[in-house]
Image (cartoon, rainbow, N blue to C red; front, side):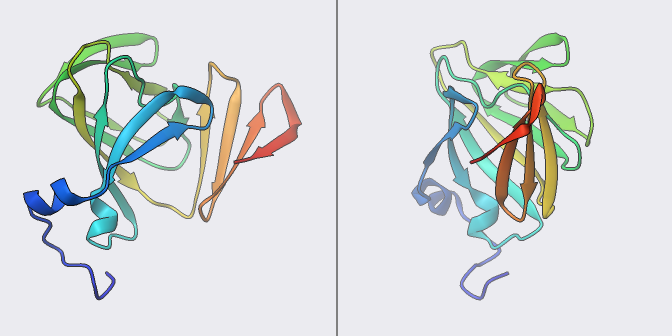
Length: 159
C-alpha cells in the first residue's frame, strides 16, 4: 500500500472521491459512473469499485474473462443481469460471482432510478476477455488493451 493511502475509507471520503464516467470501448452506450475504492486504499492485486448505472445504460458489453474473477453486489436500485442465455431481475442485497471462464454477463438498468453496486475482482497482469455478441476478444497485458475481431484475427486494434 502506498504510504499516502490509509486502509480505512470512511463514507464521507467515498462520497468525496471523484466519480469517473467510463465508456466501454466496444459500445459508446455502455457508460458506468465509477469510484475506485480499491485504488483509494492502495490495493494492488484487487480492484473494488462503487458503480452507479443510470437509466437506460449497460455496465459493459456481454463478456466473460478467461483469467480474472469478478463479483457484483447490488446496493440499491433494480436492474437486469444477463448471465449466459438467461436474464434475471436483481436488486439490493443480490450478489453475483463469476469465476474465470464462466458464462458471459452484464448488467442493464431499464429503470428510472440509478442502479448502484460494488464490483470487484483480481488484477492479474494479464487477461483475455471475450465479447461473444460482438465477436471480439480483448487481450490485456500490464494495463495495455488490444482488441481482436474473432472473424478477422489478423486485424488487431489497440485501445
